[in-house]
Image (cartoon, rainbow, N blue to C red; front, side, top):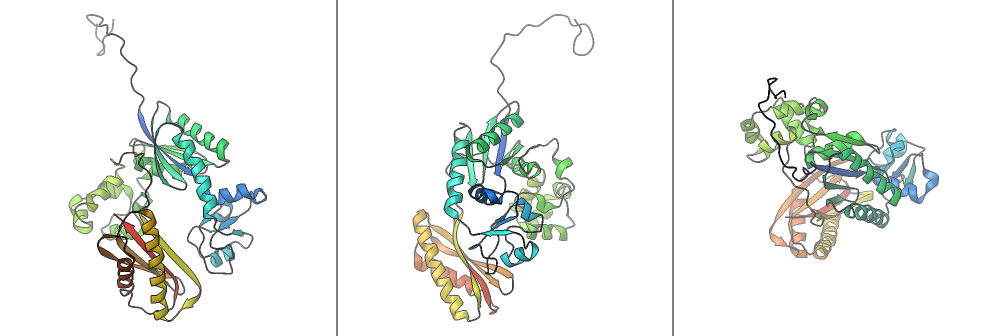
Length: 361
């Protein structure tokens, strides 16, 4: 018998047959394609294949922003957060529909029930996405089976990302869209992401990417090889090294089946006429703060921070926050913190949008 090194083996070693090796653990990220628009198309089949935009009360002549756009509308440069009026200019043939939160919540509940019925640990991220911890030898087949179950049960299409951790799975989904499956692991991490800008990473936004660029770090590969001490000095002793881990595709966050808990509760209003009188702005912030306080009380979780959002005319947005003295649902404390945050806005220009958000610990 030839041994492993190419020489003659001296004997044959027999080992008893033990239990089958456990299937390899994978994380799957299930993300519903163009979710809100897809729900609307299911309700209005005549809209299939047409550019659909959902936002505000569905009237592009009024102020409001796009909540979601179908893939057909996105070809015209319409995307979430875009002003409805701008969307109408870019795509005159778009069909505009009002937001129907109850319909989307009901559709989401059906999808999540399908995922929970798999028996695998499922972590819900919101209406249209969830992580699953799946032991499997063929995760692609599992992913395709899950997408097929969702389609058969709800009529909605889903893309599925596969990774060795949540970070990899989340990013993989984007490469599988629409209605596809993609695997992203340590083996192909740099081939897929190495030369992409740092804000391609989950958790790194445009602001952080600009700060990294000042340091001469423009790509995922450059961030992965950055000096931890330099980043710790710029972003803090925890956030700096964390950025490097993200760039290397490393995440130790487990998939958790704990019920989804919102990180915040907020209210915001886009006004059809700009508010030029800041006494009225102040009154509106008080009104929104009390609505948020009601939401916090219903959540039965105390808030720790209040954030105020102001969008000036025509479209410049800023936020300021105040940390509460302690966790609380007290309306007076939330109102006071909101007004203190509002006072940090020094420019008294006309306002087109106001928002108040309470954040939980």
